[in-house]
Length: 507
Image 1: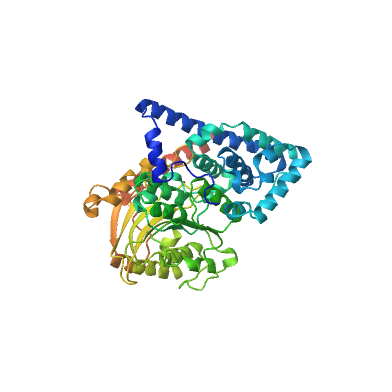
Image 2: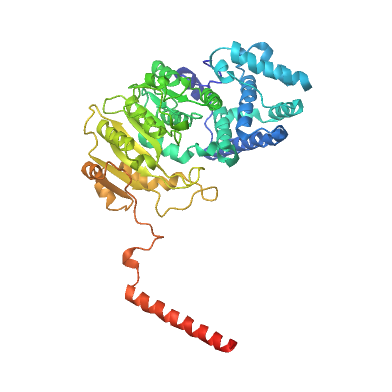
């Protein structure tokens, strides 16, 4: 499926030609056009999302709707970008769009089946196991008609990948979809990518990739650093598109969305459908320079342990198993690094939890832990952190001290009314990048370090680094107990006197 929806000016020569032919416009005009394009994309995303109302009578969920849209948008986008050659002629958009009623419904279901079984490459992967949740032909007809009406010229100008990302984010922000429980807020993804700083030529991976958001942002980061790959030679540019970025996803429908997202961003790297905690994950060992991920929360169903046999401390806790997988997947070269979102329980759980943390600190330099605010994930009450670590060449004594940044205490309650923004991480970014972290800590109370010996003395617990909560009364702020007792006694005597007076009046 290489080449479908690929970007214009993707190689040096093409880009050079574009640069020679594109007129230089005044800065304000450029800005105005960019703002217009962004607004147009947002409008298209909103229109696409609102089409979900058409399908309510069919009992379709938000997630099913996004999946259904993916089937249709793929065909429409292929037509708009003139890349339909990889799609069998009988199943292209125009053939679908001219049908009505039960004929349309039957044709559409046959299209899904055949593309999933008889097509090739990414098309086959996207439509594998596809089936329609739309029962009423008139609803399918309505979707096709409305998609045809959208401003596709504007969408192509801004970027079809951005349009699709907007749709995925809309789904995640809709609580009824359930996707928000696992969706990593965009500002947090940006910060994790920014600080890990993936570079050209490095292999990047997300072992629980969802819709491929981390890798999309890693790709964007590298493109920005290389002038849209213009500074790379053809071999390096090919590697970035075809091999540099990869992932693994367990849920088929989510895997389908990840494939579509990657393709729209001209990323051809492998996205495996499977369970990282099964034998599938064993082939990823020791192969990556960068890992960015937010593994799923919770435990294996029924308390099951992972089916792969190469994890030293296999438990029913999925995050502990993913943590082991991650440090085993990093190259042992002293440079390979990871940023991982994990819930609080990973920091303090005894038993296997203690053993995994000790192994992590032996094999990797666990240099930074960011204590995240509550409320940034839709699973209410979940407290999370980001662990930043670098794989050591040896397997012993890699961590000497761990730095903690408390972005949880005395922070606003984040949600729709107070969204998490990149600016909220400004203090952490400055502390993380400080040449002298100890000097930086003198000016930021949220930034604290603990020696490995201190952590070991606390059973390898990493549940530390939180500052005093201003909403709680400290011991020093409590009133004198004797004075409080006298005050309470006085109030009791007053109350007693009032009660005696009431009794006298009643007698």
